[in-house]
Image (cartoon, rainbow, N blue to C red):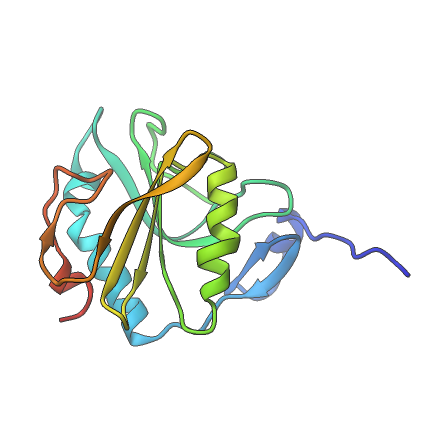
Amino acid sequence: MEARKLQTVADLLDHPDERVELINGEIVRRPMARAEHGTAQLRTGIELSPADRTAGPGGWWIATEISVSYEPNQCPTHDLAGWRKDRMPERPRGVIELTPDWVCEIVSPGHERKDTLTLFLLLQRHRVPFYWLIWPENHTLVAYQLDGEHYRVVATITEPAPARIPPFETIEMDLAYVLGD
């Protein structure tokens, strides 16, 4: 029996299809985008735009559909990710190798395992301080914060009301808008 050859970021960059990502050494197609997914992703970015507009210390770079290389065989494309400008002074370009300070995934039906387990464990292992999961169909946002070696839930929101969610406590997000109401 022949061992499976793990694919790398170089294989990913050479791949002819751009709607792919590298998960556990395998190049996989990203789920087809649904209206609910796109709406939640766009509106989350809009709601967080004040953090992205802040210059210098305290500001953030917020990006959508951005590939982050965590390991030679792990390069997912995040729905949204953010870096504090004091850690990343220049705007992100290309495939990013610096671990984000925040990641948000919009959970797609049929692909829950990737977001809730595979990426969860990868981000926890690489010490991404904050991880959000949004389920547009269920009108739910769950926010995790790294606490030592493990994530703990810091917010579970199911009501379409304004909320301040770490690490963006200075921004009151309109979750009715984000979740599509």
